[in-house]
Image (cartoon, rainbow, N blue to C red; front, side):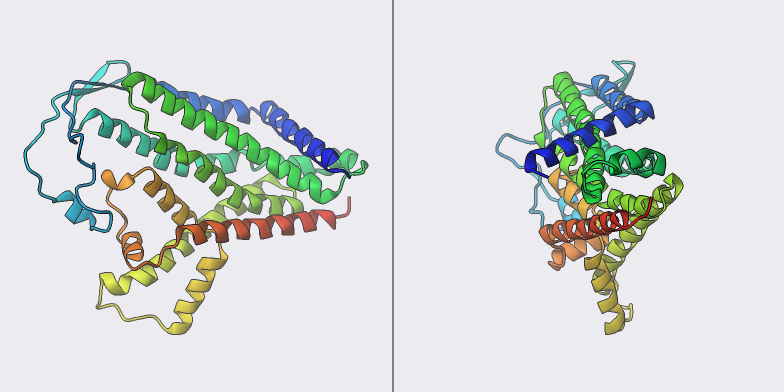
Length: 337
């Protein structure tokens, strides 16, 4: 096949994925949740309140290398009082403002990015798209495609890219919609919030590759759903466990050190598997979550010890996803229909 034919096949598979999402109502369910988020942001408002940060002053009073306690207790000359109010539900609820407008908007963006999108949104996306590949690979649906001069690997990878494009579209609707709504209502446009789009899609791609492997092997929606979620929990536990092993001897010197064999096994597992906790930590840093939320002690210690490498975490997670997707394509290519 020529390069143009390959691109045309992939484009058709992407379009077919959107058609499938419309027929299964997944498109409208995800769009409804995004619309709810936009509506909440449109109902948000800030009235009055003095800025708590002076024009020549950074929001962080101490460097990022300082601990959370030091950043909270940092001394400062003078006291500014935020005497405005925060309004919700288009003014139906009014709350005294304990921070300036920019910090209030930033706090809401943190809740939307780290709570609504990075956790709940990711899990819902995995749940609602779990049936896309099994339905596509069902014998009655795929035999017509297999009769055409298109490689099976291209069909699977193209469908995977179709689901990924669909999730990217929904992520852009959510993040751009809520960001625009908050900007229109408050006049504050914090573009760091938009880092949530690539980081959310990256996490989804990593764990949806497991769903693709199970679909190529079993072609059952329940198996894809449970398998991808269990793999997510396994990776998250391994990711946190590795950081805990590194940090606990520093946080609690009374703990006996683990054997070199066990530490080595945990380290190898950490680098071999995707790292959802690391990706969430990267998102938290990108949108400056430390201004409002205390860092997890194990994560903070690992960073202070220079045992956290964001670029390597992303690259190794992508490499693991590519290997899993390659295994799925190989499995599909050798399956008899």
